[in-house]
Image 1 (cartoon, rainbow, N blue to C red):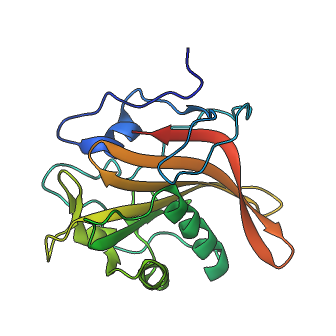
Image 2 (image 1 turned 60 degrees about the vertical axis):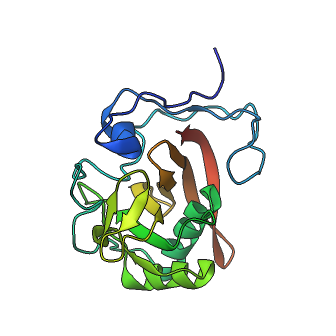
Length: 209
């Protein structure tokens, strides 16, 4: 049985990552294969406790609706530096292809039951980092690819889901890049303090569709 399980059974109308949330697809151990970013994944990483893959889109997504619910995600006790580090980790999952003309940005905080909009500062930082227009995820829909509803521009969707915070203030989170209805990369990380900065460490769980 291969070390890395590919999530291949998707709901036709709910698209790829809604199926990742509600179907039986499960994350597996990372193998030594190369991901979409072209970087090798470390082999032999022990799996952490199994989690349901991150909602991006979330259970609120249905065909014909927006990817996320309006309103800013729960960011209580999260610094701008922490959020930037988590979303830059999402960018590292996959960068926009040449046919992508925009970025959609969603987030699920600790108290959120579904994907909501990332804070405006995060949206602006991703736009500057990738030099593409960026909008909150509630302004985006999903067809063959994510798209901006107002302009119909094809987009890539970046989503962060914060799962837990421990007593040492380390965060467990999923970082996901969704670029098509059969195209998404997601990895679970722990965000830990490293001197005066925050560093994301892989837990060993990932999903690819």
